[in-house]
Image 1 (cartoon, rainbow, N blue to C red):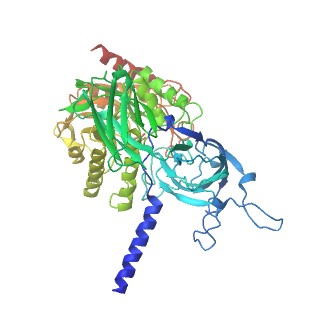
Image 2 (cartoon, rainbow, N blue to C red):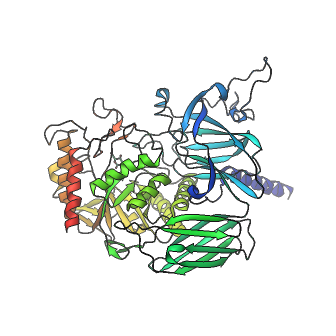
Image 3 (tube, rainbow, N blue to C red):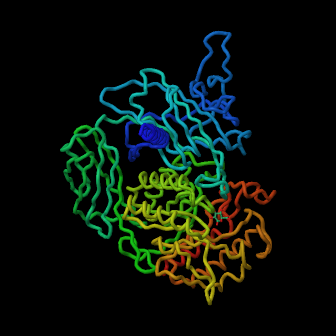
Length: 600
Ligand code: GCB
């Protein structure tokens, strides 16, 4: 019996350690509107390929790591690191494009930042990271706060009891080593930019504060706005008011067990690509008040059609990686997002596939203001470990954080579970479970995944992957004229589907080096890419169940899979625009196709 008790104790002990390691709170919403201090700017860094600041020489995690930020007290002291005299990097930003020596670096790098803090009574403080690629272990004043895994979603720590009056320091161990069990796994066709790639904030909220909220049109209606607000440190019966001044609506709700639910009958002007109307929504309690700009729209399907606010809408899109034009590297500002978005507008798009991971909140918000419908994706990419439970937990966590952050964004209409995954039973249940989770968290949007697994029917390609059963909208990536088939052969390819569901051609494309001209059958020329687009457009015109497309890709982007000298030079050249902002011929071909559609 004693053994059993000891065993139980150990199990409990390990569960609580595991929970400490990986459990983070809900995400504060719309942090732009919160009182906060920016921790952006120069951070001191130490490059640590051997993880010397984390493990001792016996490779055990030890308590005198670099996170202690120790200083020499007397001349005889031996301390073999010093943040104060170290190199610096900008946050937000990837390390690869900030320092030549770090261009190919994948491993551990330590970041440190000092900041001043003055405590206020009845307040709580959160350290909020918009994204760190890939694994972050965060320490405050030498003490571990926790760990976050996944390179593209936000996370936060409640640091109220850990801040001190005056000087504080935060240290982050960032590790972007690729691992088989990770999401994404070891191979990916984009650059594994490491670092604190998005902004860091210290956010102050009242002790009794609004944690999270959802304000959306109820599924299948356009006149009923409903949702919920969750509160920290609130009492049962506390009042919450939800106000939409422009609609002259205010509803009162009360908190029960930390949550208040509400619904409002209203006739909002609906958000749509042609009229991206946002309303100011004010949520207020006796202690806290938050403001958000929220749009109301409905998204649904009818057979193979996609309906926005009940109206059939063809998704004229483009795929985008979140890389900055001209300087390359990760985007770090709304301005850099706008450069990409303006090009998509010029192309005639009403839709964006934000591939292959959740893009920054700035990207989503700017796109929303401009009227783009958005496909948002988690990096379940190619052959990840579908049989590994930890891999699943990781993917589900990234999905949860993506939905938590963007659930109030009308622009987001599709949650994508995966890209180009190979057919198998474990993969079907893995992605099936993700889809189930997504629907639990948000039943208003459509679920999709990009597939490259079509088979052959009597008369051409046949979409019959069993994953088609799971999703609401089927994405198809297809590279006729590039990875298979002659360019000329594409136009006559026929498609059929085993599912009566909308299909989005989520990728077609081919590479071209801007300024390289030649014959239409000469690879890497603009003429080849252009001919490929023309032939694929002819093919797509014949697919009557197609309801959108997002060719690959708006702009050339860095990828370590693309070494060909003088052509690729570490860039995937399938962009319609070069990384220096030069438009290739195919840009205008796709633009013309979209213009033509508008005339119909
Ligand atoms: C794909 C992938 C995308 C690649 C692209 C390519 O199918 O989804 O991530 O970059 O092909 O260029 O090969």
